[in-house]
Image (cartoon, rainbow, N blue to C red):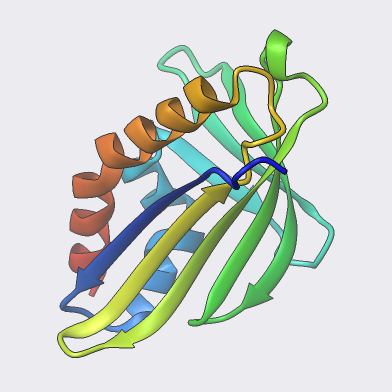
Length: 147
């Protein structure tokens, strides 16, 4: 059996759960850290969740397509992510945001995986870790500036 491959971030934040929740769910805030993409979702379980970029000329590109699996305000968001790159077509990962109590405020856990069954699993996992590390500072700034 293959070892699970999950990209993980643990981010302690000196802010409220409300501020973190806004950063995760409001399109105008997701755009600040998620590669200029706004998250569009109606927050019904099973509904589409798409991260869409609006270009300067007004055209739109959906970079990530997903489905909402769990919506527990101020606690947990879970999505199924449908990978569209040619080598990953048909593969699905899960993206989780979990908010927990922390001595300075909130601990935000970000997890995406399991990539162990993907083609080129290790490379996809490493790419995912790099991507989350790349946006981490912008995510932190957005969470802290939402008040």
